[in-house]
Length: 132
Image 1 (cartoon, rainbow, N blue to C red):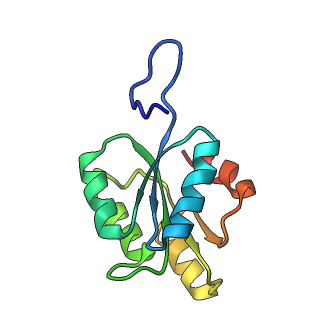
Image 2 (image 1 turned 180 degrees about the vertical axis):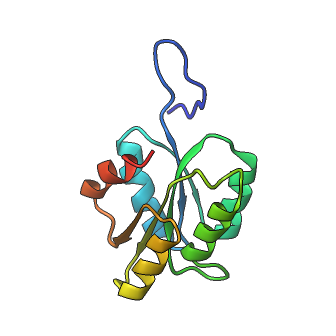
Image 3 (image 1 turned 45 degrees about the horizontal axis):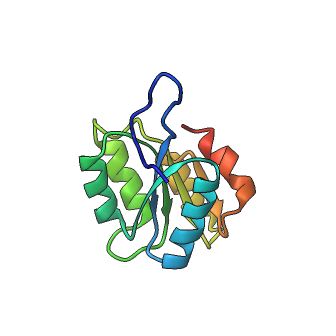
């Protein structure tokens, strides 16, 4: 499978989504669902790795991140992205096992495009990709 990031006249490069999750299984499931929709995926374990990827890669079109992770939360990552002139245009979708109204409000008020209660499903993917 090609992970070419450059499109040509006959085919357009598939969008690049950064998946951030500390749990291997959840990271795998989200990545697999996205790849089924012909999405290029980079998957990392945490927000600090995500920020490093974002510093090095210029073609990421959307961030799909878990909320509860060690060291930094998905909200912390959202704030770092929205405070960066280089990154603030990127849509961020947060997923969590918890449906806590105050947390959802905080994330949405902070600029998240959506807050998804896990498990992420195939039916969520088209909606997530509509933010690109």
